[in-house]
Image (cartoon, rainbow, N blue to C red):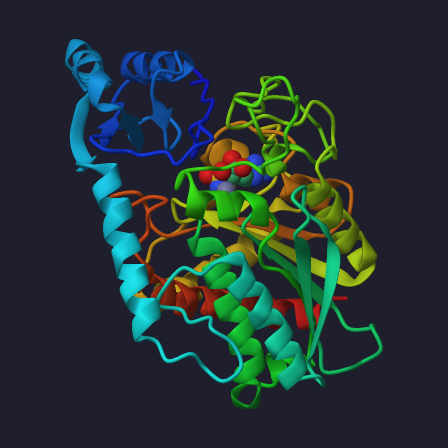
Length: 420
Ligand code: 0X9
Ligand code: ZN
């Protein structure tokens, strides 16, 4: 029997500073189809936040408010579903990381050129400053431009890293921060940008042989909101209806125009996976689309960086059928993941999104392959596997995540450099 997996992920629909006191995350494992069905029914009921999808024999992370914990335990017990507490108090974890951040920021002596470091999660302004500081310090390598404006009028920063070649080299396009709560994504993407630029002399081939385009924070409005109001926010912040401001925002990763709204995508504006009603309703997805299209003819790989789960995903999300060139995509992914794993033993699994995760439609990677025609498009779900933190990955994992992900990116760059 096929298990219908919807998904959910980060977000609670509240617009004032949202607290998660007493919220608990349980890890449950469905060992048979009846248990998987019971969990899927629970997910459909929308009473709980599913941080990860229901899959047979795989852990599913479920967050419960304090009032509903007993109800959740009743479902586990009634169906003999194996479970354990993963995060005892979500707010405590958020606060612990926040205190840690404040301390660190005070401790840091800011570098001459920018504030960003990789032992903390930083705000939009710091990421933007980092981009322009690199552009100013390394004008021969870095060009910063504005790919568009977010709904709340923030600049959507696009960074080109190139050592010349008049736009003829093969290119790689990377983005981060499509989902607001996945803070490890822009942190890791900026780590890689820094590595390419500031350590250029140590490995010039990774810039000399390919051109790179980075949009490190596609969803700055959501990201800022996740810092100021709701740590688990997922979508952007577009107000869809002035008369109903309780349901705000669109999932940018459901808003792309390729098999739009063909499953795993919601028409309900209150849902965390609201698709916007039509393709490309969101300024952020339009800016990303246009930036990708501008270089699509020479872009061989599109890497869209998310979290969490440690998955290296190929299209498609809308069908379990595999792309015609799946074997080649899988082979390159295997090499990249092997290099990543060799650093610290971090395990990633590889597969198509619909097969490995769940059905979903309108994500950027499906569009990048299906419409923009970029052959090696991957969604990378960074640390962790959810055994501990999920979206609340502690900042002391940013550098390890950067180091291991960089190894994978090197493999992609080496392959892209040689492609026809
Ligand atoms: O659901 C998503 O948008 C991505 N997972 S996340 O937990 N970061 O939200 C997965 C998208 C995978 N891509 C395709 N389905 N093509
Ligand atoms: Zn994501």
